[in-house]
Length: 232
Image (tube, rainbow, N blue to C red; front, side, top):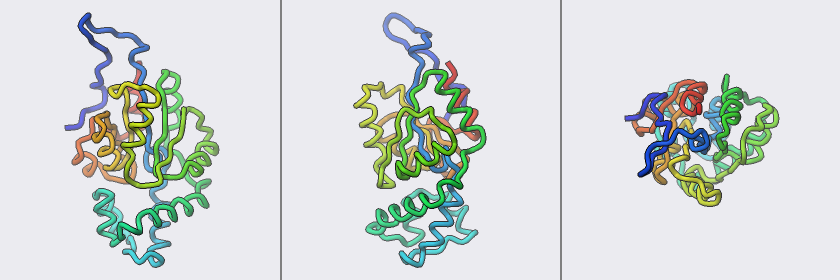
């Protein structure tokens, strides 16, 4: 069962006892991008509707939207009738269409101030997304977001766990200090695969029930709740 905000243990213990050092409480927060930071769900639907004839998959009508929000990525692919061989081609096309409209996309309300607060606390902040690094950087520049230590792009919609593992190993982070924050069931799955904590956000692509079914470590409904989790 996922935990409520505010239950994070703010201490480190060893054989000598427990220590409440601010330095020890600094965390590594890796964020998904689309649906977590950037409100791009409508753009995603628009692009999928635009290209469905070209790639011969099901049109997403209004009744399909909530149905798809309750599905995993693999279930959506099957429901829309997309061949596994088409996935990288369609993903590339979506990223290209996103580039054309990235300047129109907005940050979720309050997220900019949350990022600033987390950075001031001293936490390490990263982005890992299947969107392109170009699109993400366009968005960050337009929204004056400078708090991230690095941006990582994964061309496949699956396989995020390997990139997170590389980030941890390269920087010699402690896995217990690393959280992956995302809006989709595949984000929770990626975190579980490498035994780091997941924080699911309910304002993105997947709905709340779909996220709960994957049992994230935490589930939040507002960006400001991140400050409650990681205030030191």
